[in-house]
Amino acid sequence: MNNETEQVPVLAVEHVKKTFGKTDVLKDITETVHNGEVICLIGPSGAGKSTFLRCLNMLDEPTAGSVVFEGNDLTKMDDKHLDQLREEMGMVFQSFNLFPHMSVLENIKLAPMKVKGVDDATATKTANALLDQVGLADKADAFPANLSGGQQQRVAIARALAMNPKVMLFDEPTSALDPEMVGEVLKVMQDLASEGMTMVVVTHEMGFARNVADKVWFMADGYIQESATPSAFFDHPQTDRAKDFLAKVLEA
Image (tube, rainbow, N blue to C red; front, side):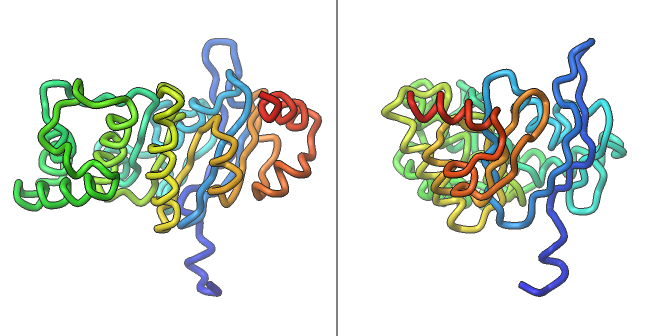
């Protein structure tokens, strides 16, 4: 681990700001994500967490600052090069966004074949392996409407993984699920983390953040107010804002 390249962040966010109209949603954020790290981004609703996550792959363009992915400043990229780099960043949303007229297998195969030019046999083999990985090997021919929410979200994760990304971004991936389905999605994410996938996860699941994250970023009022290990953050929050937040969510 003394290798210098280990210390170069996969993602570096420098003085990122985002304004919508007259509202400063992100005020000044500088953080880094290193290879293999799992970052959990937590905080009150309306803090700017999802906006920040979307700035990481330029779905939302920062008003100021830079987002550097593997040495490339995404804020200075033309659309063609930006799209190429986006292929390296998997994104899983709250809603599953599966194509309803396609089978599970077809949903997973689509992007590798269309975007990367992968042949059908290879795409099928990869998709089946990913379905096995997320515990849905028997659902290849099913359609999204016949799956539970938890199953659909696991398919959405498999679909993102089919592009072989270097980083996975999760925007509250369990918030649209019934409570009994949350665990099956978190289990897949926990397995990914243990395999070394670099992940940035916006979540309200405090148990996941405590047990799986390498680092917790606490965001409130447009800033990342604390960046700490889970044990340090949950056991010894430094700011009054974090103490107030934890008192409310851990009581619930």
